[in-house]
Image 1 (spheres, rainbow, N blue to C red):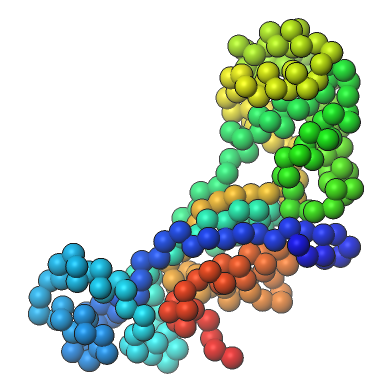
Image 2 (cartoon, rainbow, N blue to C red; image 1 turned 60 degrees about the vertical axis):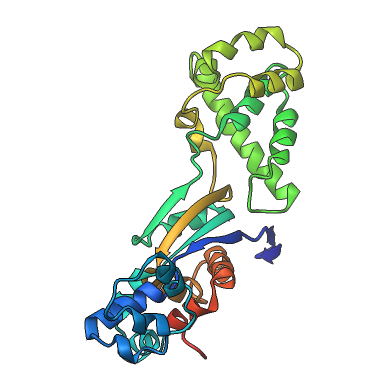
Length: 277
C-alpha cells in the first residue's frame, strides 16, 4: 500500500507466467551472421550443422547469457533480434486508468477482465438495495467486493455512492429497469424476497446471470476500479515499455506496475533491455 496525494492505493500484483528464453534470439542472430561457432554456448555451436531435436531445443531455451545479444542490444542497437523472445505476465489489481495507458503499447497481446460479463454482483447489489430503498446496503455490499485500487474506505464510500446515484438515475428514467439488470428466470425473486435485501441479493447471485449486463451499466465505473489482465510482450516491445513507464515522467500507477513487472522478470532479459547505471 502506498499513499499519493493524500490517498492510499493498493499496489498491483504480477506473476511471470512463461518466458521463452533467449536461445531462439541468439540462434536468429547467429543465422544472420553465420557465426554459430563463435558462440560461448555449446548448444548454439552444436546446431550449426544439424537440426536440433526436442532435447536440444530445451537446452537452447535454457541458456542464461549471450555475448552476441548483448553486443547487438547495447553496441549496435540491433533490437529487432530481441523480438524472438517473449514473456507473459498475469497482472492483478492495477486500475482502469492504467489500462488506458497500458493499451497504447500496441505490440503486445492483452486479455482483460471484461466489465461486460463481470458486473453481475454489482448490479445485483443495487437491485437488492431497491427492495427497501437501502442505499447503505449497496454501499456496504460493494465495499466487500474490494474492487478499487484506492484503499481508503471513506474515499471508496464516496466512489460507491456516486455509482449508486448513477444507477438510481437510470432506475428512474428507464421504463423497465429490472429487465436490463436481471435475467428473465430470476425476475420472480423480486417479489419472493421483497423487503429482504440480503436474501434477494443471495438469490440473484445464485440464479442465472443476465448476459452482457455490463452493456447497460458499465458507464458507472471509474478509473479507480481494479483490472486483471494477462499480457504478452516480445522483448523489444518490453524494452520500450520499461523505458517509458519506469520513468519519473510516467503516471505513478503505471510506474508501479512497470516496477513490479521488472521485479519478476529474470535477469537474463533485463540485461538486454535495461541499461546498467
